[in-house]
Image (cartoon, rainbow, N blue to C red; front, side, top):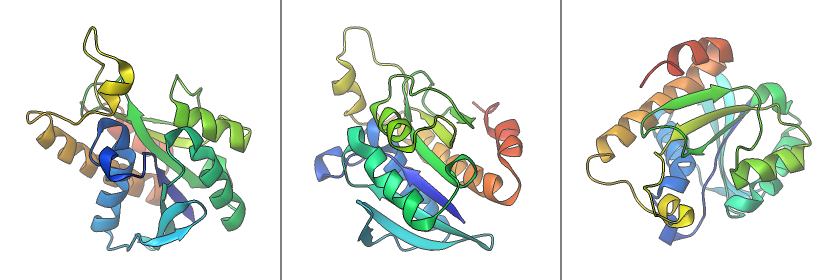
Length: 189
């Protein structure tokens, strides 16, 4: 079984912001595999289903970004999974261009507070992650204002295509392995 967690902030004002790309990815995966994500448990909105015959839990933590680790820890403990092999975390990355993906098996938080919280609660930096590029903040902008802003009209089609790639990358990790997914998606622009 895999737990796929998309990071974001839960209230309506954050819908479709750059920082909520993880939530949007969960919506795309749920749509692709007809998984209903409507159970409120483990401090998350969750859904259970299958990707190519493999059971998955999709989750959107409801703790707000900076406390995401609380929800992830509950999910990992309840379902008794190995976070180094069976947890996939999807989140925004300002160091990548809009539309770019980076799949990693471990690493630091890189300044991302949601990942910092997950590392703190799990006690390890080793878990699968899909970083989704949201672009670097423009010069003179406040970082919080930028990541809590929305994609512009030119970026919208790129974001839709990127979310499809995230869903495909999850399928590749689950049906093949993370190295195969990295070989395919870490090179795409």
